[in-house]
Image 1 (cartoon, rainbow, N blue to C red):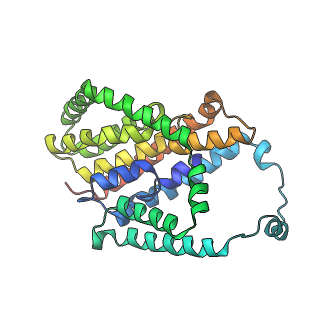
Image 2 (cartoon, rainbow, N blue to C red; image 1 turned 30 degrees about the vertical axis):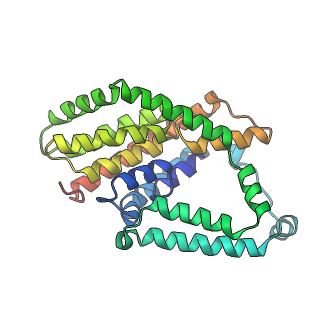
Image 3 (cartoon, rainbow, N blue to C red; image 1 turned 180 degrees about the horizontal axis):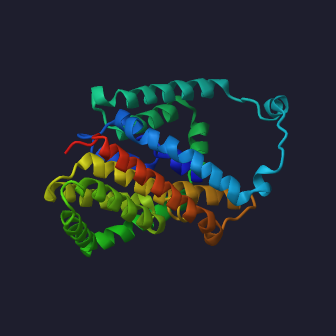
Length: 297
């Protein structure tokens, strides 16, 4: 779950917040831009988090030698449906190619993903369609629906507008030369802490108008720079608690079904320090990019 959240930050389709940001700001950033800007930051973060996880669990996780017999696994878990594998693999490859062609074709990634899902369902049998529906995590979807209702209620109360005004006023007080780097670090910090407790999907949806308003109102800010800061903040912030991201919730559900329940506190003890380390590394990375003149106002 931890490394899934970190790795998912590197592409437009890797994490739900990235998809939301990429679709909303498709005039400014594309699929390749995510790989170009976020990819190196993710690669920079991975080794530090791996060392922390190794230190945290110690011998309990890394002190045991696991013997893996590849031949035995192949016999125990053979590929039972080559036809389905070929069909799904072909459609998946076509969808990935369309993602990379986004700067040329300007087709929204959401439409590409829906096209791929529909194509796989239509190419299968009626039994396969019913089996796919049975595997949908309906409890997780209902949980997210409740979070969206909660966040929309906050937006209607005007809290998000107040947050945008306060952030804009604070950032405007920075010296013009340091304004953009200060704005990126502030957006990343706010997004990281808030996403850990609100869930990064609805938070990203409500934070997008905030950064757009900030870029329009405050001189010296680039919407692209704020978007990358929001990506890092929301994706890495989702590691902080068990309810921070969809990956955590799905992982906890599967783990509970397998007889290994994960509590909020047990996840928090490792998730929160991992989140803090990741935000520090990505913040330094964004500051280095700004110093190098990557983000143009």
